[in-house]
Image (tube, rainbow, N blue to C red):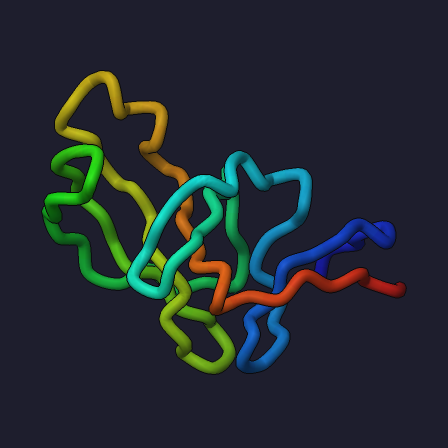
Length: 108
């Protein structure tokens, strides 16, 4: 496991598996099925599901659902492709539902 130097982590609410680091948080202004969601530049300890095209509030995207690699909890999705060039900044980014994660302070 990587060294986190007491930086805040976001972990799976179900099993506390580390999912993302605080410095990878890009935005808190996204919405998902359960409500508020966060956009991260990177995520760890996740499994990417099958890719599908989906119409979201900001346009048509190719996305894949992401799941916790430890417990299998669905966490959100990863943007694979944006069909609108104005939305291409989202490609490769992760949307994680706030209700599915906990903010923790790592004590190594």
